[in-house]
Image (cartoon, rainbow, N blue to C red; front, side, top):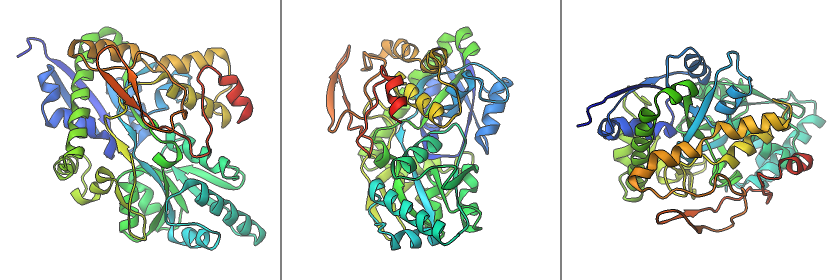
Length: 408
């Protein structure tokens, strides 16, 4: 046993991608590293943000853009946060109300989750609604500074829809999405699992497309860490990162070996996601009910494979470009550097060095450039990256941010 124990309190939302945190505690990986990990369930991202700001949480399950937003001063209370680890890739989807889906079917939508075709169908639906003077559509995301918001807007814009003009986007907590669509308050939403599955199962929604089809191998949640705590307690943070790395590998093995029910039951417990085990199995097996039957979805949620836990600076830079595009922040070289510095691959590397984990040697990469999986060399062993394409064929070079913004 280790002589020093580290007390760490972590806030999380009841979502599938809190899995690494839950498994680290339940499987004893945190304890093995000398970490007493207390998990505190919250009901909204705003609550987690505020409790981090006042020091209730040293670390938290965060939306990937949130540390960047905090450091850019886009939250009510400014505080410094870093992201030394990602908590997986993929895992969310866009769900429409049955009424909206019926309209989209009339304009060419298909039950294949293809973002390009269904995006065109939505654009045609909106044009038809405008001609008939219909009430504008209301879509929902979980937070203004979420990948949900930015990927939804990216998909809409690439499909010929102008967000905030052709339709409205509002914020609804994940757990209330299903109620909001059932009550007719919103027409569609982008959220993580299990809330898409629950909306479809209740008969109130139909899947339109999924995150892994809009941008394959794309970021979703990160481990957010209070920067001052990380500076004071580097060893505690390193031990937590090693525990979470082992947790990610355990989740990946469970999914590969057909033990999804074991993992789902762990996550579904009342103190964690408080849901039926069966509502988590679609995302863990990659077989989701669209509303018209089951469909196999490749790479829907990746907890470990393809360097899913590495905090790519290029992910931070892409998120920053979307903040600029949608007028959340003004583009300056200083702001770009703040965004880049919010993700800390250097801390991740140092933490995993003692266990010999294969880690990318570069801090960033060209996003969307890999049409197929590719082995890349690392200091020890090898890693497979990609495919990672955007549905519209664009690529993002993190060294060409100005050019990318000019072409947006």
